[in-house]
Length: 168
Image (cartoon, rainbow, N blue to C red; front, top):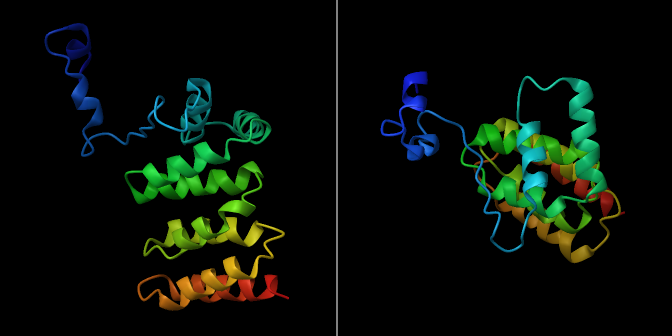
């Protein structure tokens, strides 16, 4: 998109902003259930900026933790349109320090990904979740791993070891 196009109302076409071939766009429905605050979504989008300095990143991660934006992060991971964004969002999950104990299986499912970075980031979140003691959840997680035929073998082995250690 060129500057002249932005200045010419007739030439500018907003649908171009959602062209997956030319732009990486994170879309979250602000009015869908559950409802998300625009500021919360803006903070999350800002964290995806590769040029964000460490101080600003820490401040935004603290905001996410203090406002307990677990649901927003999970929804963003689910709706990510590409593996690069999904991996970044999973990274934000563990960097935020939020308690994702109730979402343990979600992260196990993400760790089954054929994309190495998605699997690694999801493994990191699952590995850092403490106090998962529900036998049904842990058993289901192991079954998911054992049934997976396409994921990264080393990550899946490490995840299975982590889960087995939680069963003790």
